[in-house]
Image (cartoon, rainbow, N blue to C red; front, side, top):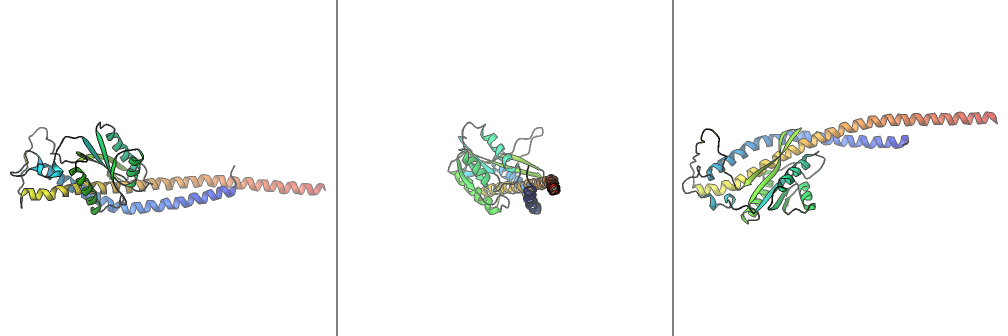
Amino acid sequence: MATAREIHRHMKGIKNIGQITKAMKMVAAARLRKAQEKAGSSRPYALKIKEVLANIVCDKGMVAGLDAKKHPLLQKREVKKIGYLVVCSDKGLAGAYSSNALKKAVAEISEIEGDVVIITSGRRARDFFTHRGYNVISSHLGFSDKPSYNDAVAIATDAAERFGDMQFDELHIVFTLFKTALSQIPTSDIILPVEPPEKETGATKKSVEYLFLPEAEEILKVLAPRYLETIVYAALVQSAASELGARMTAMSSATDNAGKLVKNLELSYNKARQALITRELSEICGGAEALKQQ
């Protein structure tokens, strides 16, 4: 049985850890609100720019003189190699946030018969795939919980260059969609090449027509890279909000568990002290009896 001093030392360590986890919870909660606002405002814009670009390059939405095949990001070719952009965290202490995203990516990759290459965002994703022998062709680190648009531009530019160099024929992105601080959903989507919108059932969908100024091809040269940057940025801010929400929840649970453990240790500490006092009293009484007998 541990001594009272050992239990007291253990209690002090647990209390210190509880203070740290409480501080981390408060920091995550303070940063979550701003991250949640970014996630909420960026996703509609990303979905809309994808819809516009998909309508432009689809057969019915094609405007006169616009050839999507001229732009490398829109070229459809036989899929021999698939690329995966996996977004995770740089740090731990965020519950199952990273592991859920990695499970989603591995589940999809395991069903692919052809070659797969991986681009990672976040140290956890890089370490996971590198240590398991996957073909990681690029890694981006250091901004998982506070991404900027420049970080998205760097990732999108890297992915676009590799897609243009035919290092992969299709690019999937795996990220975590933020719902609430307690609910984050690992999500996968195809972002390259741009797919036409799905045909609606029932009533026939009207073709979308756009007027371009200047020329349509000039606008496409700007719109296609901007589309990829926007999609990647939306995924980064969704994942950042999910990471902070998961970390806040995990640290809250850790703080509560630390409090419960301290209470249990206090009972053990009191029992140990009581046993120590009882033993000392017994020794004093035994010594007194021995002196009387002399």
